[in-house]
Amino acid sequence: MRDLQSKIISELKVQPVIDPQAEIRRSIDFLKQYLLHSQYKGLLLAISGGQDSTLAGKIAQLAINELREENQNNYQFIAVRQPYGEQKDEEDAQAALDFIQPDRTITTDIQASTDAMVISLRKAGLKVDDLSRGSIKPKIRMIAQYAVAREHNLAVIGTDHAAESVTGFFTKYGDGGTDINPLWRLNKRQGQAMLVELKAPTHLYKKVPTADLEDDHPQLPDEVALGLTYDSIDDYLEGKEIDRKDAQRIEELYLASQHKRHEPVTIYDTWFY
Image (cartoon, rainbow, N blue to C red; front, side):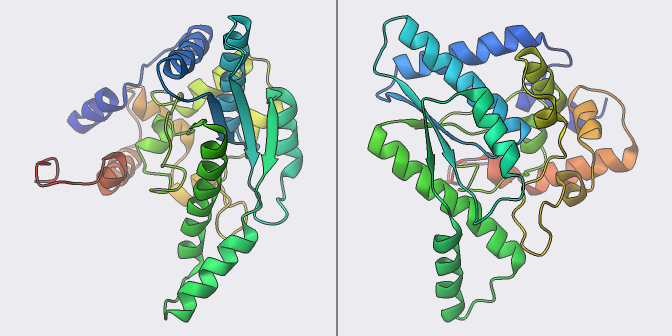
């Protein structure tokens, strides 16, 4: 195993093999204990219709259900839908909500606020190309999530997992800006195994993953954007030998995205020296 590969696996706490049922239990207990030892009265998560938010959402609702069964009746889980106008895979999002059965669903369409921000920036002389616009969307989504969360005193859940974390495939202060990440430590196939255990609709974890942020490339597959397959990333994170070019690509992405996995840098930080 490569030295950097070992370091990454250790840092992200990825296990080569998991017991899906045990990890479901571990995640539920993690959320419950967090709420019981915090000031929050529930959880909030944006539901897209993809694998990661479906899994995190189901775990969140199960945690809230158990707290209520234990006479902690003042907790709730709110699912937030955040389309940019009309979402092409809205049926998947609705199927995810049917599976999760959240206590409440709120929709905050981000199109008007995103477009207004782009107009404002262009008036200031910025170009705001498609990639820049794509990075604005998740930040606008997070503004709305925290507005809802503040009004209901909820903790905001993130869906970051090891296969996203190692590649930096999330937006800093967008979907990367959350309170608690119950899927952190898991790779993509491990999350899928947990959804199988939870009896989720097959099409929700078999669908092609996409961040769907670029207007010029709608529903661009993650694997195309990354130049890597999730199978290759998962193999790497499980300590397996993979194609040399793929390993180099993963490590390049990891090193280039170090700043995303770190709190704002202070004079006492030395990790980049």
